[in-house]
Each structure stands twice: as C-alpha cells, then as structure tokens.
Length: 269
Length: 283
Image (cartoon, rainbow over all chains, first blue to last red):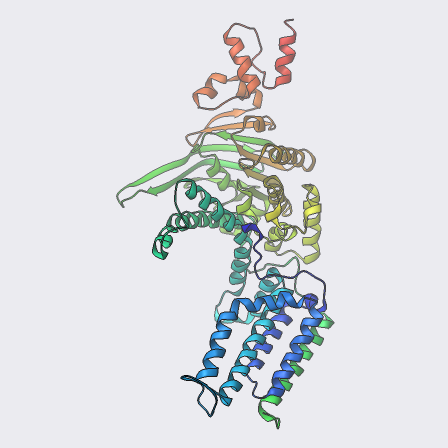
C-alpha cells in the first residue's frame, strides 16, 4: 500500500505542455507566480484565469485531478478568506452580532481567495506535467549560475533525485519496522498524543539507522562507478531546447509584459 | 602481464568502543599476495570477517592499503590520478541491489557510469543498449527499479558495471539477498559474461554451489590466504576446510565420509555426477 505513494503526482499523458523543456516550465511557473502578485484590478485577474484555463486545457490533465490539489490548502483558504471578510475595517454592509462585513472586506477576501486558488492550481500544474527526474534536471541546468557563488547546484539536484528514488524503499522499510515492532507488542493506536508520539521512537530510530546505512552503501556504489561530482559529467538525456520551447518562452514574455502593463500602467489598475 | 596484482597487502583499521580508551586495532587483511590473469573466474571464499570483502574493496580503490599495494592493469590504486581509470576497469557489484541503483529509471541507472566518465551522448546510448541486452533486461529499460525483483535489480546493477566496459568485475556476495531463481539467473549471467566476453570475474561468496563455477578458488581466513587452487584441489582437502569452519559441496562431503568408512573413492570428487559415476563402478 505504501508503495503506491507517488511524489509530485505526475499525470502521465502526451501533451504540448508535457513535451516542453522542464526549464521552460520552471520559468513559466515563476512568471505566473510573480504576476499573481502584480494584480490590482479585476481585468488582470480575469486575464490570469483565462491564461491558466488555456494552459490546463492544452495540458490534457483532467480538471478533477487539478482541483483535488485544492483540498490540501482548503483550511488555509477558508481561514484567510474568513479573516479578511470579517476584520477589514470599512462601512459595514451586514452585521451579525459582533461580526461586521464591509464592502472592502469582501473585495479583499475575493481577491485573496482567487489569488491563492490560482497559485495552487498553477504550481500543481508543474508537477502534473513534469516528472521528478525532468524537474531535477531542469533545476540542475537552469540554476547553473549559482555555481559561480559556490552553491553546488549539481550536487543538490543529485541529492533530490536520489531522495526521490529512495522514498518508496524507505516507506517499505518503515512498513517492515512497524510490523516488527507491533509483533513485539508496541501499540501505536491507543493513548493520548504524548503516548503515541513516544511510541514512534522505536520506529524512527531503526529507520534512521537503516537510512544512514543505505546512504553509506550507496555512496560506495556511486564512487565505485566513477562518480566524482558534476565535473566532466555528461548526460544520457541532455536537455536541448526545441522550437516549441522558444515559442513558449515568447508567449510567457508577452504574458509577463501584459500583466506588468495591466498592473502598473493601464487605465484599470 | 596479470590484470590484477595484490602485493603484500595489509589493511588495518581502528574500532572505537563505548569509551575513547576502548580502541582496538583490527587487521582485516594480513599480508596477501595474489595475481590474477585476464579471463580468470576466481571465487573468494571465507567466513564472515575473514577479510574477503575488504579485499574486494581494495581492488576498486574504495579502501587504501595500510601496507603493500594493489595494481589494476599495472596502475597503483594509491595514486589518486589512477582512480577513475581503475574503477572503470574493475567494476564492483555489491550485495544489496537496492543500495547500488542510483537512477529512477532502469536505463538511466545503467547510464550512470558512462555519464560519470563524461562520454558523448550517442556512445552512452550504445553502451546502455548493449549492456541491457547483455543481461537480458532490454524489455525493462523504461521501468522503475522499484518494481523489479531482487534478481532483476542485481542484473541491472551488473549492466550498470558492464556499461563502463570493464575488463574485470568484482562481485561482493552478489546473490546473498536473492531467492533461488534470482540467484540462478545472476550466476548464469556471470558465467556467460566470463566465457563469452572474457571478463575477469572475482566473486566473493559463501555458497558452495557458486564456488564450483569458478576456475580457481581462494580461501581466506583471518585476513590471510588459507588455500589457493582449482575447485578440485580445494575441495579434496575436506579436513582442512572443516578446520576453517567452511562447508564443502554436498557430493564432496559425502565422498569424504564414504572414504572415512573405507570406500575407495578418489579425492577429486566435487560434483554429483562424478560421485554417481564412481559409485556406479562398484555395482
């Protein structure tokens, strides 16, 4: 059961968005997130939403999968919208006891809510259309300039991809340890919070020991296969830009320019 | 010239107990001399702690000699500049298949070695394709290693080494964590690679049946070489093997017991067929 966990919930299908270079998608996500914070008028919100809907449409990822991602942030969403509705000062429209709802409050709440929703939907689209491998490769390649300030980008990307590979192995290990400890009479289910947290100790400790042991083995195996960091290393599947990637970059730049115009210079700002 | 040369190798390490004063110097390898010719299939046999794994790690340059030296194709492992070249020429396959697979996709894992060697893209693809073909795992090239059986994973690990086109492969108990079926597959693969591609094999093991595949057996005990010879030479010395705490193949054991009872059997019996053959002559 634990084996089925998929990280980043990649949705496998063949679409234009899936085929884009991961660097383009990383850049696109960044642009999209930044522009969300430039919004000041309903016009730019609508523009942003249309853009998102268009990308989702091209990506062929079913809408219900994407919307499911909202569940995780539902609490934050309700909480922040609620706070805004009730606590933004202004001329009250409705009064329920001590709670007042103002026009300004509703406006901010709606803006904030839609901003959050679009943020979550837009970023989850990245993981839906990009495999973890492509993501780490993309980060490795596009953040190369950090090497100049002595940040080991390749090594960090390698660690990320190894972490991804070991998640299912360690969850399996966790499963085994839990069963072994249950067989010795440890009860994980009953008792208060403190007692339950205490009963996790005999699981966490062996899990860590096993993980360190595995890491040591893996390091030896990697070294024996000539691994010596990113220097002089080539890739089996190097990232190469194609025409579609340049077109996508162009579209993103136009979108960015439009949003900057709408946010700062247009009559509706 | 021999492909591997181990000269007066000594390896010592220090273990620290619970307190700082509780230090102990352990001699894992105690003055070993071995020379291996190209194309040989050698089994290294010994109990736990006999130093056989340490020896394997020395050949790949993962451990450094305390005294003496190890030469791979004439290159000294103590010289750091040789290390990449040595590791490419003498690959090592470890016991736990899970802990030596780096990639999240089979073909990407096989490509890891050639990638580290800085090969051009087309050459990497060629090597990965032929390595996967060599181990019979082409059908799984796009699978996730997590969905493979232990034996399949170990074959991927061997493919990962094969992709570096080494002249020598060291196998450190490659079948210890496999089921009988996975073990058979891995062993026949190792044997085939030795016969067909003339790759020198050095297999650390304690399974007697695996030892019989080898042309030469080196028995280790307490960091020293206790015996060195063909399977027949080694297994005819049943008494000595028993003193070292090692088993001998079942047929050799049975022949030995029969000889003790006065049945005139020859000392060179190691396989079932040979035993049956000799016994039939009494009928």
